[in-house]
Length: 103
Image (tube, rainbow, N blue to C red; front, side):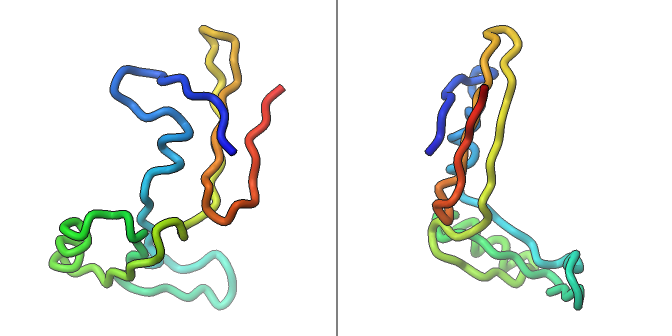
């Protein structure tokens, strides 16, 4: 569920559109959790990333793993629009377990 569809600036995505966009995740850096595994050059990309982009990343030396279309993360965002006095929020539809609320 996403709420708030105000564009902060012309030509930019609103919060919900940004959270709905396809994602890329790197596992290159050591994990925060023990045993702190890292996978050098590894990128996990959602299947909605254009195939041409995926191929280019591979040619540039990345170890690209294509996931399902809506698999990466569970992101939420909130923005306060001071000019309108409104709280705008959005939630990624991935994993279907979050809500954006404002009061």
